[in-house]
Length: 144
Image (cartoon, rainbow, N blue to C red; front, side, top):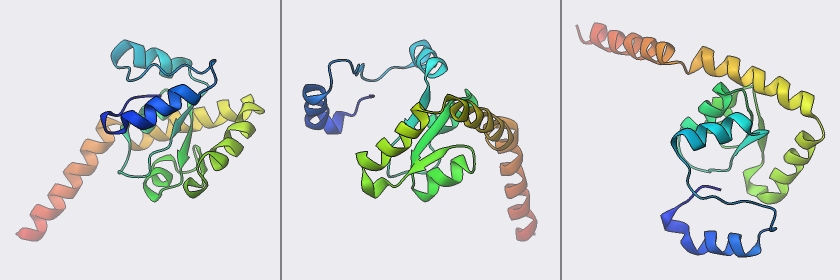
């Protein structure tokens, strides 16, 4: 679990009610973040707002299977290289997906590899830069 200064009461309640085996280290950055990501079984993004989440792309690029809340933005990001759950179901929807993944490490590895390929193909700096250059050239040509 990360951290959120706007949700202090919620985080405190989660910490109180959590199984003692669950570790909630708070926000972790830099080398610690990279170490967690490289050793994770899968990556879960529960956010309901925002565009393409950099953390999802990073997890895909690291070869981790990703599980996302089924917002349009998250589904566009993962394409066919990840898993989603119905966000409106909350924990029950997420639980079903996680139970499936815990029973099938081969599927997790396969989707992790697909995610890596997708991240490299669609979200590399070269690809993003090329897309922006194409967009700006098109705008400039239309203005002439």
